[in-house]
Each structure stands twice: as C-alpha cells, then as structure tokens.
Length: 393
Ligand code: NAD
Image (tube, rainbow, N blue to C red; front, side, top):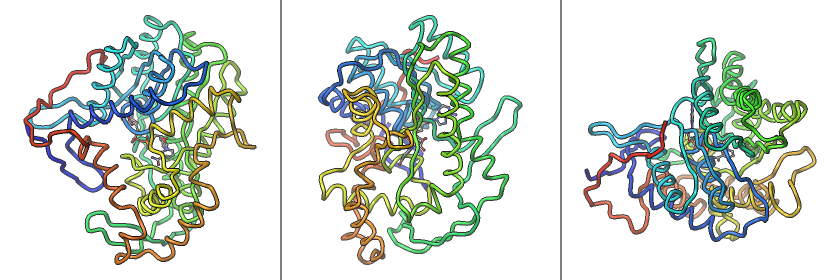
C-alpha cells in the first residue's frame, strides 16, 4: 500500500508505519545521547503512551535509564484498506527497538479510563515487574465513560464570557478572528471529569490497593499554563478548570501518602490534542519561530528527557516552583521570549504570516505526528500497513 496523508480538520486519518518508526528511532537516539541522571526510574507505567508527551516520556525513561516500561494506549491496528493509527505504529516501533536493545516493554491497548484496563495493567505489572516506581499520566482525551456508564465529553471553551482573538485557518493559511463561546456549567463539569484528576487518582488508588506500586513512587501528570493571550481559551477556560482539578489531585495524592505526585507544566507543542484548540496553533507557530531564533526550541523528547534527567531525578532532586509544580515551560515563558511573541502576535495577519510565524515548522511537526515528511523515508514505496505490536494485550 502506498500511504499518503489524508487530513480532515485537525487530524490526519492515515498514518505511515515506516515514518512513525523513523520518528521513534530519532527520539530514541536523542534520549540515548542526552545527559543521564545517576538515579532514575526503573519500572515505569505510562498511561497515554502512544503519542506526544506520553510516548516521549516512555522513550526517555527507557533510553535514559534503561527502565522497563508498560504503556497504556488506545489505538487501532490496520483494518482492510485503513492504516493503523500513528500511536499504534509508534508503539510497535518502540517495542521492537526496546526488545532489540534488551529492554522490557509491554503494552495494554484499551480505554485507560475503564476498570477493565486498570485491572489488566495491574495484572501485568504484578506478574512481570512486581511493582512500578513511576507512573506517568499523559492522557489527552475528548471523552470518558465513568464506572456507572455515564459518558462525559470535554469542551475547549471559555468560562464566563466569550473571547475573541486571532486564529489561523490551517486549510488556507489565513489569519482571522475567532470568538470562543463560554462553556455551560454542565460542560465545565464534564471537561473536569475527562481531563481533571479523578481518573489519575483512580489509577494510583488501584495500584496501591493491589500492592503494585512502590512506597514513595513518583507520579506525574501534565499541564499547561501559557501566556495571557491564551488564558481565556486555556488556563482560565474549561480545560484550565480541569487542569486546576489535576493540580488539586496532586496535593490530595501527596496527602494520602506513599506516593510523590507532581504536575509538570509542559511547553506548548504541536500534538494531536493541541492542534484542536482554537487560537493556540497560531500562538504555537509564532512561539516556534521565536524559540528557534533564540536556540531554545524543544520538542516532546527534548522536554521529557530534560524533565526526567534534570527536574525529577536530577542532582538537585525534584525542582519545582513556589507552588510545587515542575516548570518545563521555563524557556517558553522567559520574558524576552514572550515579549517577542507578543509583538509578533499584535502585528500578524494573513499577508505577513510567513515572516511572523514558523508555519512550516508547525506543519512539519503536524505531519510528523502521523509519520509523514520524515527524512530518509520513501513515501512512494509500497509498504505493509499491517504491523503487529508483539506484546499487546
Ligand atoms: P496526544 O494527543 O499527543 O497524546 C495523548 C495520548 O493519550 C495518546 O497516546 C492517546 O492515544 C492517549 N489516549 C487518549 N485517550 C485514551 C484512553 N481513553 N485510553 C488510553 N489512552 C488514551 O496529547 P499530548 O499533547 O501529548 O497531551 C498529553 C498531556 O500533556 C495532556 O494532559 C495535555 O494537556 C498535556 N500538555 C500538552 C501540551 C501540548 O502543547 N501538546 C502542553 C502542555 C501539557
């Protein structure tokens, strides 16, 4: 099958197995070459391990510390004329590299929110690893079904009043205004159910109850704050309410003892999830330009190796801000970076998009998520889309 990208809205409905493999390999090479802290995690559970920050966390743990990893993913294998999802190909590639390098790596595929998948994962931990010493929670999901069968859908809306600002239409590369409407109380509650900390706590409680987590294990969940221009849409919006809940959950987990729970505030990057947020993709493409020009740009793997090696397991112990959060957005939020972004934001329009934003970098990263546009991959070659994940349960 010759696989080409088919973009529908914010996602690409095809994925390229060889491209995904090449991208995973390049992340592995980065993690291998990065400076390693002396003591790191040894047995790591990554929930949401197939794409973006979760995949990079898994690669960093395995290749910076030789950690055994169990990944929980929610992906689809190839079927008839459809390719697998890129998360499926990423996971298949990661596992095959890890095995060849003598690293334990197994994967559970299914809904991480469900009890069934928690039970399966815990069974695997108990039989193969005994206990985990690090749990990374990196889910980004549009919906969640809770134990009583209720389906909650998250929304990306403001809270209180509508917000109008610039956004980019990636179909025709035009900049125009968008007004984001406020979420209803019910929508905010649903967003907190999906993206807040309830399920993270359920995982930790289930691991504790089954004696499948070491005393004093580390657990980390990811958040975002960003600059003022995105606040009505993000930090102060419906997703921000969920992230506040995630932060409060980290405090509760710490109070309940036995684990050290952290929120890592990560950098804004192109992932399948961030591409869907109004206003944010235009901000990201300006940010890319400024951070690249200042030689401080990072992708998911750079962020996650730095998180593990310097901020979680580094020589200075866990490095947090005054509120106890790990700040991987430190470079993004530097005043000189934000001043430049603000200036470009004020001036940007359809005509000067090329000079004011790194749209090429944004698009490259977007296509890369699905295994396209990667150097050295022959996109005219006939490839077999049917790739197995050897350990998948
Ligand atoms: P992503 O879309 O790249 O990855 C999300 C992962 O979750 C995927 O592997 C997906 O398969 C998995 N997943 C989704 N629903 C699932 C389910 N029901 N069961 C099992 N797995 C499921 O997203 P990302 O951008 O890497 O986001 C991960 C976390 O990082 C989120 O909490 C997000 O808010 C946070 N974050 C993202 C950014 C950013 O700019 N992308 C910045 C800061 C923080």
